Image (cartoon, rainbow, N blue to C red; front, side, top):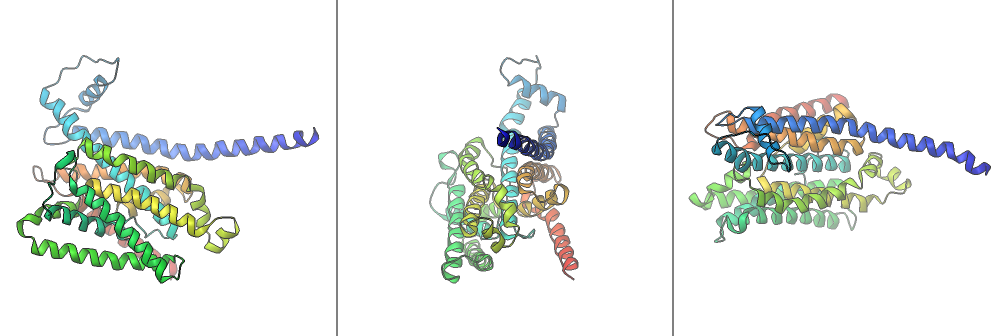
Length: 364
């Protein structure tokens, strides 16, 4: 009786602490969700044909069951919003969220804010896979989503698998982070060289490769989004269940092992899951750089280093950032469209240089 009475207050304290921690995580996520909704609404209104935000809201509400606003709009507006802009915004949100989420996981595993989801050769592997699909006799647009994303996805996974195999072989059975990064860098160089050879020798047939290498959403459609969602969910859950462990991994490996973490296995699971998410994003939209680098770092600067919060907020931050980049890409030089990867590089390049300069100062 006495023992139960003594432990009850401690249980209440732990419960309040858990609720407080959840609240601290949900408030930033709520702000991120509001930002994402606002950016998505902005993207629905802006384009070659500007549509008032109030009208767009009423059009969206009319699609809900048991809701009817009585709004009458031209058929062209209906097609623009639901057949062109909405799939594009959904694809941009999925890709941005996936890249930022996987980038946050990579940075946690390597304990380095300069790490990104393309560190192990995902981008170059996907680029080579896409190039092979484009120059092959296969129909590019078959089965509703085409062979290009399928080959890109397989190429990205092959690159990550090879990097892990080479790192494991070079480390005598273990997996060293340094060896893994070096393997990824070497494979990136090799795959990029092969892709360049295909570009130089393929003639006019290789022109679509450039679109993939710079990334974009001009071919976004619902079948491609739906095809990628299962992989995003599986990979995302693989990282999410290790969010608390990612906090422990910010200690050195020896301290994490003393706290009961199987460091090698945990890192492998997180990297595999994050790589699956990043590979799916690349397959859906091509190579869009810097998102997985700058968004998690910006979130970390604002909200701290707790990965239970960082991963969640990075989803909304990445989605909002890529939707904004897509708005710029399709409106800046209208009617010409700039690849989204160029826009993110223009923003991300200076930010990356800033990070390098900051780290140099910090270590001086």
